[in-house]
Length: 447
Image (cartoon, rainbow, N blue to C red):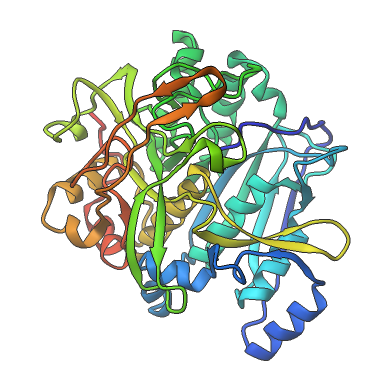
């Protein structure tokens, strides 16, 4: 989930660490690995509250590409993550090596090539990871198992103020573009939080990514038509209607959220709706839903010209994927000692790394970095091919409520084509990847 609450972390020495986590491809190997991994204290698969990675890949058209050898090899996906230390109380913090090895063993995935880049956060324990980091990593590895993954750690002090956030995220983007051709970030804050200078600082880093033919994907937020709280703010639910940065910057690919319905046995796609979990069911006391709406900072980019439903300003999201904790992909997360949970991935921060993995698959298919993909996404969305390349989301809304203060932020309804809750929809990668490989032009001008 695009986390609303995080543990404090500390800083330490700078280093880059590399992990090769082995997987067991045979059924017998998987059984032995599962038996030695210790008991699962919660299992979303048993309760039909998530999908195994293969079923998830089938639903989004990824499995046929993997079967054909398009698995992300030769590509590197960069994940911007907040450094973590073990807290005195939840949220859970675990060792990313342990969780990824267990995930690979349980689901028969190959060795993961994971590197931790610690030169910015300087964490004393760089292998420690929050649930967010585990989620991002396992989604990318499941969808593009041949791709390398580099995690650029950011000091948690970035979340103390807008000035810290803009400076530290901009630095992470600039470092990330030297590490790989696709960057995914699963955090965002309301546009209203930032000064013009801070917005410019972030936009300058995104321009550098575009100039280096690097794709940047960002989650659109989990508060529907409401903007996310500002860095350092005590409130968990603001009453401001709006969108978030980085996803509202025209140089990012903004990923919204859906609720996926697929065949539990085969993974065959059935349908999707806008992800919207009511306040009474979210466990947070307020609605969580796909972030989307219209910027008050950026004008409409040229690639959005002529799209029905888009006015004079940048509209988000561009695309979407599953963000519902009851319909997500199973992820393995340690619960202490030898116990672990299998929980469904959740939040629009699950959609962002999935789209990053799809871009990596398309990069391998094209034999080159795709760079700034938004113009290609919108060309495909406007074309007859969109019916095959995207799952069109036509039901649901991202209206959200906060009952304790009787706040309702009226959102946007899904509709055929692009909409301000799910963009063009979720990927059918089997059709989308070849189209992206042919349509995306490195260095393309967003205007």
